[in-house]
Amino acid sequence: MTVYPVTDAERRAYIISQYEEIELGMQHLMADTAAYHVDFVELFEKDTSYFLYHDMMAHLEIEPNWPEVSRFIAKYRALQPARSDYIKHLLK
Amino acid sequence: MYENLIAVCYPAGSRGEAIARIIELSPSVYRRNPDRMAEPDQVGRMNKTVTRFGWLTDFDVQPLFGMIEYMNQRGIYFKFDHTLAHDIIEDWQRIVPQLLFAKDQNHRYRLHEIMCRHKIVVSDHVHSVHMRQLLPGCKTVAVCGDSRLAIDLLYQNGWLCRPHLGPHTNPTFMPQPISTAKLPMDAI
Image (tube, rainbow over all chains, first blue to last red; front, top):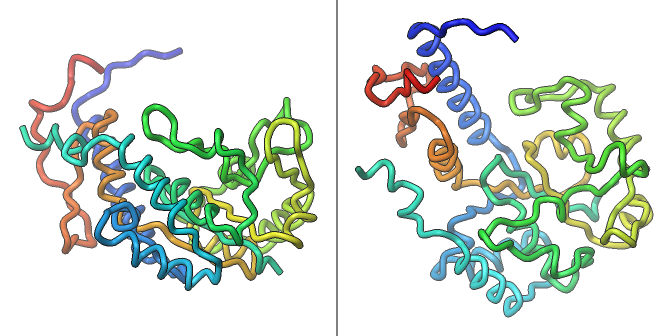
């Protein structure tokens, strides 16, 4: 294994390359031409999940099972950390 | 050809497994996973293995063979490949019917047989364009709207700086000056 000192320029170039990779990935995802888009956050929010779910079921032409799904969503949401926890490091 | 398939396509961190699970909860979709495997774990994460294609016959050699493993073997960086080479698509289409589908450790079925009888939900970290190329006829559902959250999670888990991705992102990306105070210079 070769150990060599990392210069600030190399570190900066690495970070910039990571920036560019993320930016490319975001553009790639935004250009998705799928037949149906489902917003993860909307599907798991109480106000929007009912309509989004039935919209998705109608699109996929499958029989919905809303009681089972709402049970799953309640369980899933209870296990997730609060959204503010994700950006806590940015609010400092 | 694969009209029975519903492919949930999502970027890393978007919890597409949860959406695949919700689709699977519908009675008209064949429920292949036992409830124990398909529930969120203690931390709230989904078990990622439940919605993949399944296991190969030589389970000890290749324990889990999904799209990512296949792409890695072929040296494809699928995230930025908008179209796949034709021979790769044919190769993958030849492999898929031979895959074993694992309901659990003790019950395995040939994927091709189930494909003809049941609606199946598959999901992987792929673009829906790729899924339509590899499994023609399948219905694709793209998970969106969570990319920002995924980036935040990536940042929280060890990224040094957060990219500036506003609602009107400059396509020619120029990063802002990086404050050296945030860089763990001595730590690296």
